Amino acid sequence: MSLVPNFEAIAREPWLSFQLDGQHYAVLLSRVSEVIRDGAPTPVPGAADDLLGICHLRGNIVPVMDGRRRLGLNTSVASDPSAARIVVCMHETHRVGVRVDAVGDLLQPRPEAIELPPARSGRTGDPVQAVMGWHGGFVALLDVAKLCRLDRAGKEAA
Image (tube, rainbow, N blue to C red; front, side, top):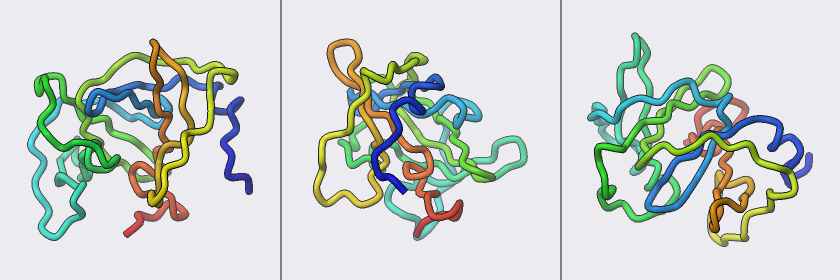
């Protein structure tokens, strides 16, 4: 199995962009079930640092992660808390919400604009699979299974 992402496959589908700590990220639109207003999730005692808690979404319990903490970013409050949203991502039968500072545009990457991310030492389970130049900067394209820690044969990682 190749560890290098297939840029042609990445470019086949649109991506939903969002911001975290002033940086741009995106996930495959087909992996997003919905985007909801940010609320106060119910805390879970003893949970991982990046798990804000759980929320009830139409009869389902959905864990909600802090996108900033999950990606090792500054955890201060967003400049516009009213723009914060929860992007509910899907992987197989699992749903996980990720709190983001703001939701952005739909992106349709071109294969020639996609590159491997810069090497970052000491990051196990890094969800950044590729980067794409965009608006004078770049967007980090995230693997939903790794972002939500669901990359072990569809089972939640510890």
